[in-house]
Image (cartoon, rainbow, N blue to C red):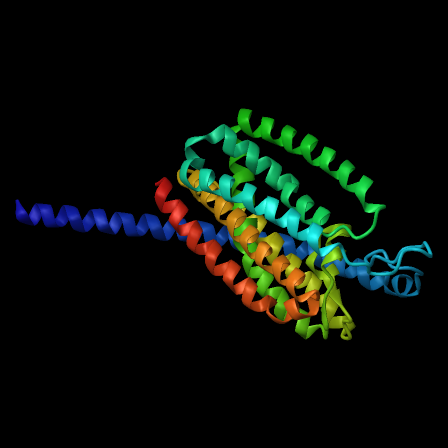
Length: 316
């Protein structure tokens, strides 16, 4: 009887190990497929950029920089520090409450979680950051229009997620992958900034297209700068595509994973942003904050992944 029991345990452990190996292989294959697809897309974009280089370099004006046409508006105006801090504090308080609810009860409230994830995917928090970095009066009507579009698209996405399990699964997988890699992209962007020869950052440029490379200033290495853009997008899109493909393998635990990552990201980003904006107000200069930006990104990364693990364990 003891021999039979030992054999049963042995074969059970072996079966679990084989099942785990197959799952890891499936996830790795999906990650590879995502990398190939995103690389192909970016290769086509790089080819298009090569053919249009001459036209781009001779074009007048700058679509990525806040260079106003009016005499009474200066170039690269900074937002009012107190306004940015108030917006960040409001977001921090709201995020703290929502993050606790999501980290503890997220997977137990599937419809509420789907609605909040849909608004997040639509860009509600990116919109908040853009509004906090508004430096020109002309940006205010645009921000109102963007909010209406975000609510409209987020509500439609939430409704589809609630009635179509497949869409809900794909959306959760993609959002989980994006938020998981977003912290790593922040650290990667610091290295790419130095590699591109950039001297600092100008955060109000986020209000244009919400792209981190738009905030890099005084870059001297043209080839490295454009290569950095494609490096960031290859990594980002690869993880998003892989998240959609791996969602089927993680179906049973995806709700808990996505809820934990959403709550952790919400809380970590808000807390670090409050610290950063408080430093800007105290120092009256973003240059001093740029010197400790790497440390703040590291704190955000550690805090987000720690909260993610705790939230996932709570919801198991």
